[in-house]
Amino acid sequence: MAKYSSEEKIQAALRYINGTESLYTIERSIGTDDKSILNWVRQYEYHGVNQVSENSGYSDGIYLVGPFRLYKKFDTGEQFEKFVNFFDDHDLEEITMKEVSDWVKKCFDKAMVTLPLPIYFRLTDEEDSLNLVIGEWENQMEIEL
Image 1 (tube, rainbow, N blue to C red):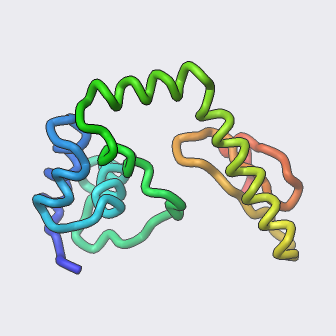
Image 2: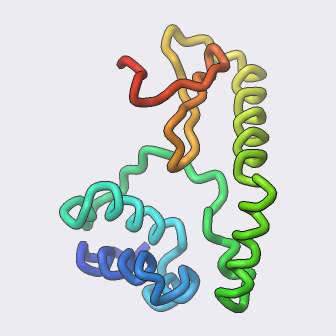
């Protein structure tokens, strides 16, 4: 895996954030994968320019599916916009979130994890977290650690 300087990571993140290039174009031009670029984007958006470091390998989450892989499926921005509108018009985000969280809870229960601590599942950009131990959604700002 190639090493990238902080400046290279920031520039790649900004190219994506500003919408000047697709994720696919950026990953091909610098020789990395979409997960790395999206991680840099997330670091930049969350922490700002000072926290996108050369050795930033830590991730506070696991991506089950590369969120923007579908960009590769569309030839034009117009096609992608139609997809997003359809997704929004039919409340597919809420349906998808419910199905995924139900599946995670089912797997958690099947694994019979017994820890005296709450274990949370959270979807990126969502305020609430699913407490897998009790099966209830909680506002993550109200969770006491």
